[in-house]
Image 1: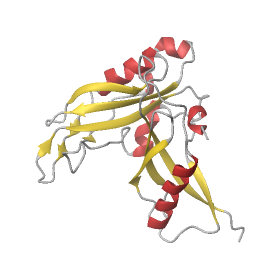
Image 2 (image 1 turned 180 degrees about the horizontal axis):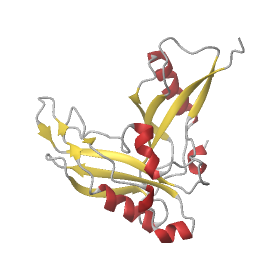
Image 3 (image 1 turned 45 degrees about the vertical axis):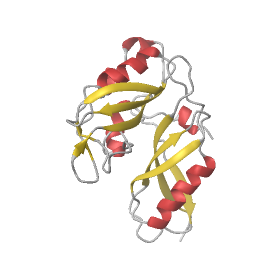
Image 4 (image 1 turned 60 degrees about the horizontal axis):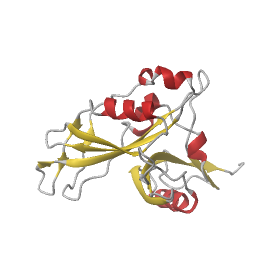
Length: 214
């Protein structure tokens, strides 16, 4: 199931979907990962040549964030297949600022921050929606919103981890969401610059879809 590949998210809309455009993964030494303070990527950053050539794709990256919350390096772990999109993603994200990671004792430490940025060109007024819908007879108790998940994929494109970034309000539905994604999700095997196998990342909302006609 590779709906990701045709339902890209505009880079400028990622902050609205996830609360910030990046999702994190902490370094082993940190108990609280880095958190982005503000989004540095806007649709206006789309390279003009890439727009003219209708180039689209996902760029997954790993940022190393210093103890002061400044990016130290940016590595493309999944290339969009177009160098201009890879380069602008890292160039803009290196201007981001973060709340630093925190160790178990609460002291600021360096940490890693992973994300995927989707570059796409929808028709005017149309924003592609990458959410997954789960048919249910009725909304689960406590459900108030779609479950926000952050997914990581291995070099073969299979789902490796599913992390709940924002709960639906129903712990049971959150578990169902990740179970469904683990069973169904697969992306085109990600490759870094130079075509080396790499890791890919995606943000995916999972929404309950009541089927009751009452």
